[in-house]
Image 1: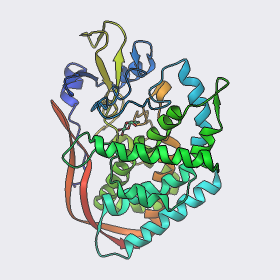
Image 2: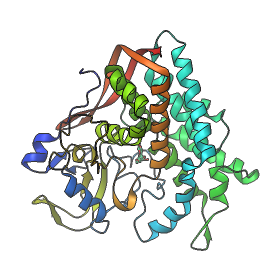
Image 3: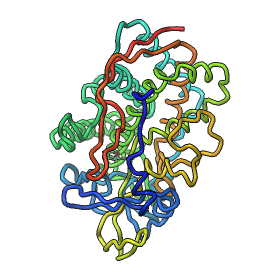
Length: 385
Ligand code: EMZ
């Protein structure tokens, strides 16, 4: 019962000091580790800003591989609100019945395919394909586009052995530029066309702004969703009784989704830039330094979560911060939750058990801390009900 476990590397620092420190490309980060501090920090956009140099709030920093500002993610209030209000309804479409039906059909098809195979490498053979196909629904673009995105691999800014890969990032940027131009010439019902036709504060969005929204849409929900899906498969492989429970008590599915997402915390942390000299956990941080809000640590805070290192499928009180908190809470959360919910329902109704054959863990190097976020690869065999 160890293979699917994601342990908590932050416990000691969280209890003893409340913060951790890491160097990242000579731009150090003070990590807030307690749930209360993380929530307060996320709330306080005046002291801890997102709209700094594009790429700087991401850890590892992306300042060397992009200069396009991701929108609304790297914009602070009050400007943030107009952008967020513009895109919010589009990103709520996953609640519509027609969207859910299409997503169910996609997930059903790929699970059936997995069941017909001898062994499957889950990250590239299942999760990446599922995520890319589902993204065609979020963008409302053609299903065939997914094949291009699948060919890029799991992370758009990273490649194996390289935390930041500028050449790879350029593939995405060039692709998005071309798609925006296509939509200008030939408007349709997709997200590009929607953004091209939109105005913020009485002004048309610039191409650069549209690109900023699209980069976020491609990058933000990619490795995060892939890790959530892959970790779910590993978990159910070791806990077939949980799949059976979801089949017998479908009413707990929503809670199970939240609990898995709490436990997996697919995005370890997100940075902010400090606007003036201040203190976090009695530790001085200077203006223009970076802090991070460590969602993964906050989700294991034992002063809030009982048995934080256990997956309690129907956990009652679950104020996790896997989708962030406050102003910048995850724009793609509705889509991600819908993917997870339909995945759990589909697995519960089709899959009896999953055998893990071999795996290679994906360990994130956070300087003082090492955190497992998922798998580089994991071979399994799906067995049908
Ligand atoms: C950024 C980030 C957003 C970043 C919610 O997270 O996700 C990361 O995976 C990307 O690398 O650019 O989009």
